[in-house]
Length: 94
Image 1: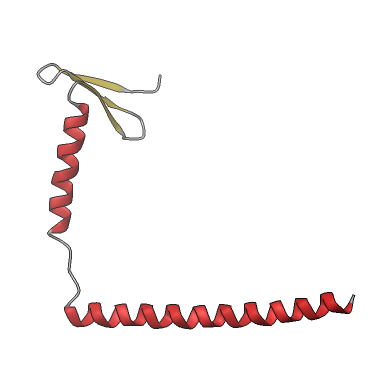
Image 2: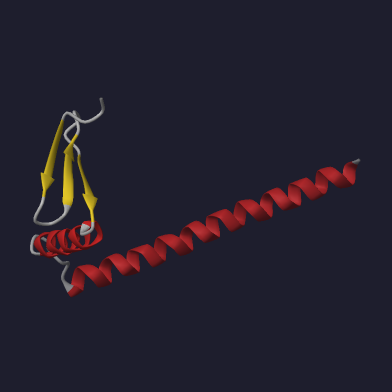
């Protein structure tokens, strides 16, 4: 049998199943409401632990990402151009 224990909560019309792995499965009418409220509570609790970057850090990292993106684009474009010319040269030989 998959579930070791079954607890029926009669007030909320739902069943709580505890599997051997420790996972909880809830079945019943209030499942969507319970999941949504639990998710919102967890988001609020977790957002209290967030350390947001300063404006200076945000600007620095944004500029760094833009510069690196442009450099990678030029790097890949250069190799694309070299391979295009080389392949064109090889195809003209035959």
